[in-house]
Length: 448
Image 1 (tube, one colour):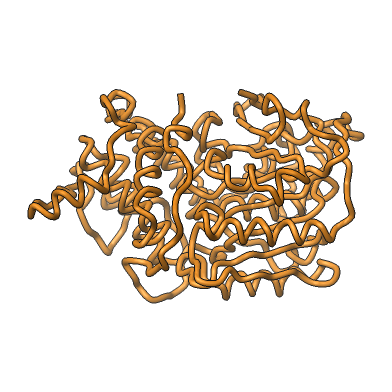
Image 2 (tube, helix red, strand yellow):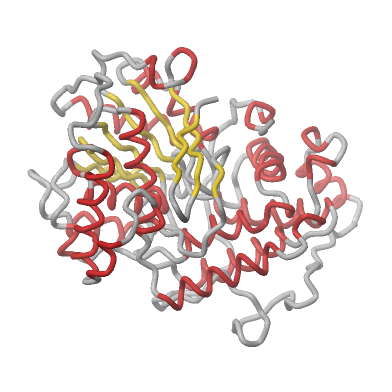
């Protein structure tokens, strides 16, 4: 399986990628086709975009390359409290240059990917032909979403038995996808989550979650500097990513010639790039958008500007954006040099990673559980509910209350980081419409 190794004085990351070509590496790209880079949804990885990779509207007419973010999927990196979406954008740029990728169209699925893609388009505009943004989130995480994610991620990360883990993972994934999500898909998700994010890897899970929760928007002035064609696709009934924020982003992208293309997927809410019935609409919309753009070739040529020099240019631009001239003196070949977190958030993330990493080597590892991949949580849940039994949802971390409306680092209660929230209605569950049949095999997603 192909990886891109990124080494520097203070960082190491191996970015995993897949393609829709023979042998699944970039050497198989067809130079006569444009290339589409797909960024996976938050909390998942590139194995979950198979319905986009294999779609006849996209896969036949485009080379497709999909990357796992540094704390997702098969990618690996040193844990860092400095990790934010500027770092992800730098990772992506280094991958482009090391792989000699041509300028590509970018399809970003969900919050973390969208924030990475817009920063990539801003710092490396010559590498980005267009942006397709699916389910734009709120600029800053909504408080009720943060509180639910904090509670459920923590419960899954500190579960000390299989049943407790399954319940917490199921509730978190149900929160993301909606309570009426197809039962087979939920079983597949829970099975995959147990392999990809077991309690033993909880520091990595916390880092991935913190990047999503602590995202910050670009200023209207910076959004106006993005000039590539942009498509926004939004679920109609999306409580986690309300349409008003997508519409606001579209209004801020004033540098896009002819304006932003906007499409609403009727009747669907979250994760429309994963749900089978919805993703076909998303794919067709993206394919129609791309077909209207000039057709580009995909010749694999060395970068015209040396990699180090190009990264120095990007770091200089970023230093001007945030008003920090000291940033220019950092190692431009380290993606962490592009981090723009405040000292307070960076320290909070670092402290959290230390706490989540404490005793993690002795925590529950689902790969050690016999027949884990064949367990069907939903069937056992229905059987126990039918027999009058209740699932035990007790938290296993003695430092953390089972429910708490007051979160304070000083008190020992560990939130998934401090943040500034906008006021919103406090909801506990997200209504959703029934969402199609599942056609994938859960065993195909399990990591070796």
